Amino acid sequence: MYGFSLIRIIAVGLKSLRLHKLRSGLTMLGMIIGVWAVITLVAIGEGASHDAQEAIKALGAQNVIIRSVKPLSDKLQIQGMEHEWVATYGLKNSDAARIRNTVPGVQRVLPILAQRKNAMHGMRNHDCQLIGTFPAYPAFTQARIVVGRFLNEFEEINHISSCVITLELAEKLFVGQNPLLQKIVMRGFESSQVFQVVGILQERTDSIKRAQTKDSVGRTTSSNVYIPLSTFKALYTTKNIDRSPGLLKAERVELSEIRVEFASVEQVIPSLPRLRDALNTTRKGVVDYEIQVPIDELNTLKAQKARDTRMLMYIACISLLVGGIGIMNIMLATVTERTQEIGIRRALGATRGDITLQFLTETLMLCLIGGSIGVLGGCGFAAFRHHILETTTLVTDWSVLLAFGLSMVVGIIFGMYPARRAALLDPIEALRHS
Image (cartoon, rainbow, N blue to C red):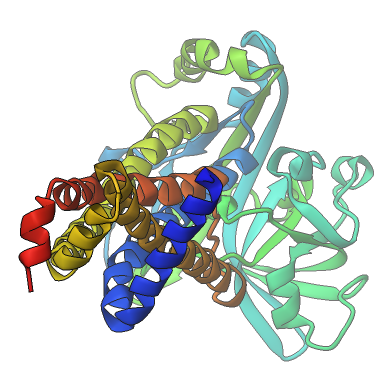
């Protein structure tokens, strides 16, 4: 009997909602927007956080990245074509050797030397970054070989003029051609050198751009050419000349970057003091390097992500609160309209509990329908943004359950008062109401 009674209550509630379609739709709109906002905002926040965390993870949680930085005292530049100023600073080969031999827990050390050049093939040319490094580079950066192979030990030992280029550069220089075993010319200020392409590489993230040198107007490029470090030093030395209009700048940097890999993540943070001691041994107080710790940045990012998610949730919950107030307002108006109906039901034997259940069920039906539409809308918008707009947007199960659950809780809280008010009406006065 109770089940039959509940079915009757739901049927009456649906009939009441159908009698006022526009009002019911507008009432549900607040709940739809609230649930939609919760799911969408959390999905956008999760997507942005995912991209940032992946970029940091690509640098390696067990890695420490050390980069050459021009000291503040050397940042004066002399203008005029007739002047040349050579600034010597940054990391050295001896620093890499000292780190490898003196810092406990170090597994591998990867030196990198980078300079801006111009790559040319046939009639096409493109500004790029020439990077001299060891064969272990893809393992350190988690880069992916698209075609061919990366540099090997034989090429490093024998100063072979082989190179690997990024996919972006290959698309610009070799339109409709296979770049493998083709020749490219690397043009610099002082000389031009010919290299043979042995592979195409795709960086996992844009993190490598952080190590790039900039031109006179601060631009960077994601088009890279990788050659053996020994070949780089044999052909170009460590002197880098940047000639821009009205400026001739020369710098001497032995290594642009040193990447250090530790045996475990737990060794990274405790080893930083020893790492700094190894670098400061010969520097006499001059700070011409910076240290980037991906695991430290990752932990900071996770904490920031938690704060951002809470903030987005608070903003979205305001929409649910407004929707709940709208539901309560409409249900109070419904109680006033149906006062005589309430009196008749009470006269026919309905209890206060029956009346409360009737109006509370109608409120929950509004929230159930509105919440369901909101879930579909939020998930659909996230999918559209992720697949069509190609912007990372991740819908989490907990955000869907939380948004839908909050909509039902809001419905119960804001629907209880109108339901109790209807139940407490005096049956005799209700029957007299017209």
